[in-house]
Image (cartoon, rainbow, N blue to C red; front, side, top):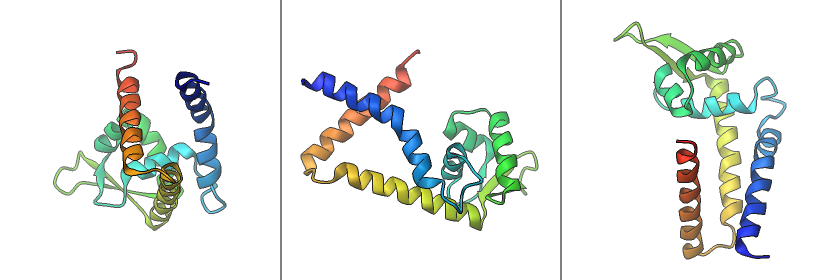
Amino acid sequence: MDSYHTINEVLVKLFNEIMDIEEKAIITEEFKDISNNDMHIIEAIGKGEPRSMSAVAKSLSVTVGTLTIAINNLVKKGYVNRVRSEEDRRVVLISLSRKGGRAYNHHKKFHEEMVKATLEGMDEGQEEALVLALENLSRFFKGYGN
């Protein structure tokens, strides 16, 4: 089988399986009350300083209104803290609670294992080629439909 067909087959399989595989790996008994999408919101909030709703919405490419609905649920479930900025009361800041931090770490561990498995057995040149290929694919997706 030539490279084109092999790459096409692998990409199609990956896109069809990746969300399902990730959900099965990260939505455990402890985190059964949230979705894979919620886990990605937790990842976007991060463990650093509180972030504004608009900054998190931008990083996820969603509207603040869409993010607000998800954040309301994550606050109710104890994963996210929400406060108004002391400097500008119009700005809503969100951060992870202790429970949210545990979910973040769990999700991060899955991604670290996924990358480690992907790079297994590759030399530096092969890793560089893979990075270039994935950057090309990312550019394709960003430009598709524009």
